[in-house]
Length: 209
Image (cartoon, rainbow, N blue to C red):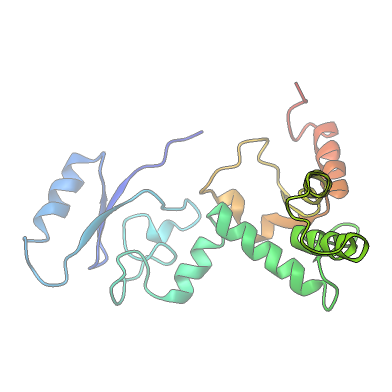
């Protein structure tokens, strides 16, 4: 895994990599202490797919930051950059899109089999309703109920998963261009297993140890 370079960025739109002494000296001299409009910070998240932003400015376009932000020129560019690079943000966005695609049916539409996969809280809500119907309410301390619910929860945890279409071979990173939305899809657990098996058979990912 290639280490990311750390960038010092200023609200005025310029930046310098901290491992470049000459660039850092120029960066530090451009912003006299206390001069209005110069606020600096360190940034570890510059994306290789955005070369215009490599030297500072907005992470998405390289333009001059606006408002109180040092990293983005607009809220739209902030949202676009973060949901295409940060795994947690990208995953949540893909899941929301799959929920919308399911329409009025509660769950997530699998991109492969096109079946609607129940979300974890939908499964638990159905389980609780069925248990209440047969056993009555006020049973949350009942060890039998808690054991049964834990079994349901273990099954429900495999109901919907987000897959990298171009595989990352186990090297999923918090920040990566591999997390672009066009490289992600929401799958049911069965389809995810099948896709992984296909990728392994094709040599795209390593064999299971």
